[in-house]
Image (cartoon, rainbow, N blue to C red):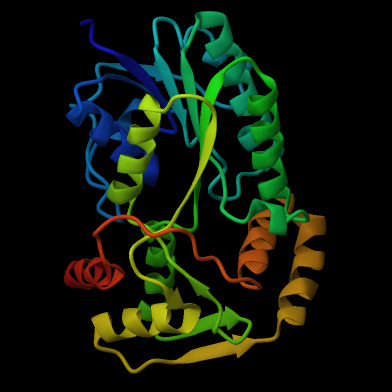
Length: 294
């Protein structure tokens, strides 16, 4: 049987690296789609693996540059995409990356005869209609559903590298949270989520998969764990949601990409975000690992 080939779009990011590693470990030939080959090398700041030696090919491309995506899907059986705008970039919007960039990749996949498209969107997207970031993801999901492509949409709650951000705040000695910190969620480790993503490559028919990690916490508990791992006395300040809304209103005028990301953060701070649990990796252990390298 011929070796199957998968294109991993967003291969240099937190989840992308784990997905490359998982597919390679299952015997797939992996083509990485990344903006910079060098970003596949070295262990990431949240322990994501060096995958430079695991990829069979690298296609250099940018979601905002349609011509650079030409040929990315040639000879590929499966496209996996976690290509998204993860931090503010001057002049770049979620619509350009999360929606239009992935749509361009889908069009390439259709032209190339790809058999399945696996896409990572957002859990509870239907509860966040006012978030530009979520809207961009869901516009692409609509494109995917309307296409002739067989697909799986993965809907995770939050990643452990998001928790690394909380850890960074705790390390500075003070965490600021919007809301009272009582809402619950179950973040998932990249390696555990990668297993779900790779399993989706063998799905039949079209489906959507909601997934979270094995443990559920409140936002307060998540941050208290970070302080504990650091051996620091916890200091958490809860801010009313209206302050966040006011800040978002102002920031949206001057920095739309930052406003988009902030809008998403505020939206998830308002809700329960608990999905079916999966995986074995614990947040407490992840925080201990982060603390050990401080």
